[in-house]
Image (cartoon, rainbow, N blue to C red):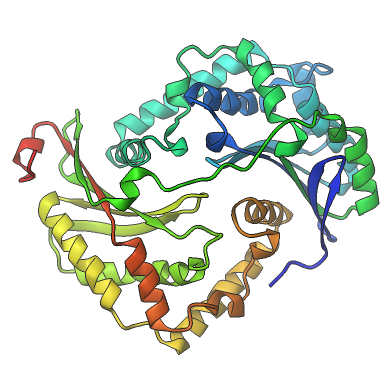
Length: 415
């Protein structure tokens, strides 16, 4: 199910996706390829993150911070940032009546940002507050620690926090110059504008950016993705129960097994919860998929007995891989439900711009942004195909247990 009226073209070396449609809002999404995948170290990653955070709120060399913010309000525009392990970016929404002025403000920000030191300090302090919140929440802190261990040695293992130690506002202009080069950019626009007018605007603004250098780096699986390891992680505060997550690799959006995994991931949590329903040591089991260039799944539950809980969860995984509830009729019903859900998402120009760009960067092309019912069933027509995708993904699970230090010696694991 392709979105109609989408054009793909290049302007002065910048790749552009344009969907011309009669919408009440024009949405612009300028993606910057790279992030974790191109940063040589955590310091470079932190620089790129704070370039975006600071420039979005800090004005331009032509407008002070106050003038910039007043201009946004006057134009009924909204500017924000994208941030992901595989890309960053800047977004803009405006009404058609202020499109010309909003585009000028948007491109002025991209080309001539003013890195206000007070804005930078505020953003660093905000980040530190958010990190303190993560450390005080057992479930959030477990995810943070598990990510750092599971992804150790991988480009995804770089964190903004670890690169902030010596970061100053003076580091940002040079980082900005390496980010906003045409080879790293993907521009997606959805709204009531023509290709000719957009090409002219790009030529006079973003087309003047330097060409730069960029090559798509390979994104291998981390070393732990082929192992089955259980790790105990101490939590310094007293907590009434233990928290457990299990990490496992799954097909990414470019994989031929992706739709089969999508079907399995829909039924797997239902099967797991059904199997563990009577298991007293486990509370609230859930499963999510992290859809990055390297994609992985996470099983989460809380338990009073993590050793027994992991044993039961592993049994539940085996049960799900052998469960025979994948029939053609139920697949067709679920595919129809997903298609209706996608139609709901199509109502927003902002969601369309984001979905088209992410599909262009992480899937095979923008055409994979909204798969149709028939496309979702390709390669997933039998229970065997779905179970095979699940079995491949769940053959290696890394379990991480977070417990307070007073209980960790009594959990029954070998140290």
